[in-house]
Amino acid sequence: MSTEPYSPQLLEHYRNPRNVGVIEKPDGSATRENQACGDVLQIFVRIEKNAAKEIRFKAEGCIPTVALASWATEWALGKKLGEIQKLNPAQLSVVLGELPQHKRHSALLVVETLRAAITNCFLK
Amino acid sequence: MRPVYLDNSATTPVDPRVVEAMLPFFTEVFGNASSIHTFGQQARAAVEDAREKLADLVGANARELVFTSGGTEADNTALRGVALQFREKGNHIITTKIEHPAILSTCRALEGEGFQVSYLPVDSTGLVDLARLTEAITPQTIMISVMNANNEIGTTQPLPEICALAHERGILVHSDCVQSLGKIAINLKQLPLDLASFSGHKIHAPKGIGALFVRKNVRFQPFMMGGTHERKRRAGTENVSGIVGFGKAAELAAQYMPEMSKRVKDLRDRLESNLLQIPGTIRNGHTVYRVPNICNLSFDHTEGEGLLISLDLEGIAVSTGAACSSGSLEPSHVLMALGRDKRDVHGSLRFSFSRMNTDEDVDRVLEVLPSIVERMRAMSPSYSAD
Image 1 (cartoon, rainbow over the protein chains, first blue to last red):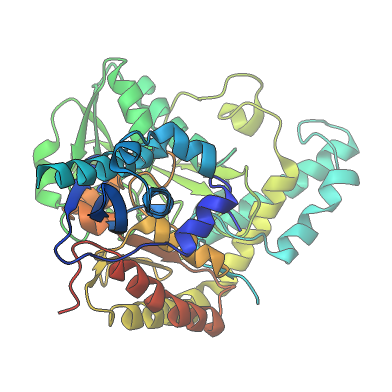
Image 2: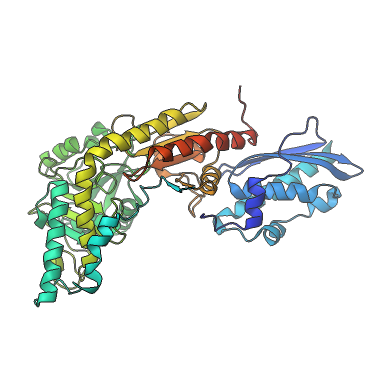
C-alpha cells in the first residue's frame, strides 16, 4: 500500500501509539497547535526525582505528529528533565526516518510541546 | 482480501475492453495518422471512428472535438486560446474559486500577462450564485469558465443559465467537464457551451488522452505549435492508441450511463447515509445537484491523512482535502470556499465510485471506517463523546 513517504518504524508508532491518554493533576503539561495545518498536540508529565516518571499525550493531527509524539514520549520516559529538554527534531528523523519537506512541522510541534510540558514542570 | 478502490475521481482502471481495442494500434496498425499510405490511413480511420464515438457521448459534431493530451491541456488551450484570440475585444475572464488547478493556475498566469480574472465565490453547497456572476460581468469580459461538476464534492453548476447570461452579452463560455463525462448526460446540442474539456482516464480510458470541444465558428489560438494535426487546432502526432481507447471508453460510458445513475448512485447513497450516522459527520457538497459517484464527508476531531492511510492499510483507497496531505500545507481550496471550518477540512474524505464498484466495497468501508474514526477521536485532545 502507498505508505512510501514514511518509514516502517514511523508507521508502526502510528498504528500502535504508545502513551496515549491524559494524566490527572500532572506536574507539567502543554498544548500546542500548528496554525498552518491545524494539528493539535497535548502532552502531560508526572515527575519523580527530577525525571519523567509518567508521560502521556493526546493528538489531533497527521500521521507523523502522532507517530513522533508516540516515539518521543517513549524516549523521554525515565529520563532527567534536563536531558529531555535537549531533544531536537533532527534526532526524531534519525530514528524514524527523514520526513517529507511539508511534514517537518510535525517534528517541530512534537519537540516544542514536549519542551513546553517539561518547562511547565519547573514553573510549578 | 480484494482491494477496494474508491478514488475514481483521481483516475479509473482501464476497462479490459478498452485495452483490447487499443492493442492492435501499438504493433499492427502503427501508422502515423497524417501519412497518406495505407498504414497511415488505417490509423486515420481509427482516430475518426473514436472521434465519432466521443461526439456521440457528448452530443457534439465530431469535427468540433480536438484530441489533447488530457484535461489539463484542454483547459489550458481553452483559456489561453480564447484569451489571446480576443484580447483586442477585452481582457476580463470570470471563473470560480472551486475550479481545478488547471484552470486556476492558467488564470493566474494570464493575470501576469495583463488579463483580469474574477474568481466567483460559491455557497455552502458549492453552487455559483448567478446574481454574483451577472454582477461580475463587465464590458471587458470575453469568457466565463465554470466547471460542470466539481472534482472534490461533485456539485454540478447551472450551466444552461450561465450560458444564457453570457451569450446575451456576447461572452464565450467554457466548462471543465472532466468529472461529469460519463457520470451525467452531456448534450452539447442542447447545452450551448462554446468550449468544453474532457479527459479519458476518468472514464476507464488510459492516462494521457483528452479532448477539447470547440463549437463550430468559435475561434481560438492553438496552444501547441507545429504541424497541421487536428485541423490545425492542436499540433503533434495523434496518440492513436490513446484516442482509440478514449473512443471505446466513451462508447462504453454511454452504454453504462443508466447504471451510473442508478446502481452506482445507490452504492454512493448507501455509503453516505450510513457514514452520516456517525455523530459529528457532515456532508460536503449539494444533496441534489451533484454527480452520482462522489461523496465527500468531514468527520470532526479526525485528520484526513491519518484516515486515508489507516484505510489504505486495510486495502481501501480514498482521498482527502486535509492540509499537508498532498505535498502542500494548504487545505482543500474547494472545501475552504464552501466556508467550512479548517477543522472540518482537516477531517475530510472523498469517496468516488465507478461502475466497477460493488456492494461488497461499501460493506467493507462501513466495516472498518467507524472504528478508525473512533480510534482517532479517542486520541484527540478536544473530543468529547457527550
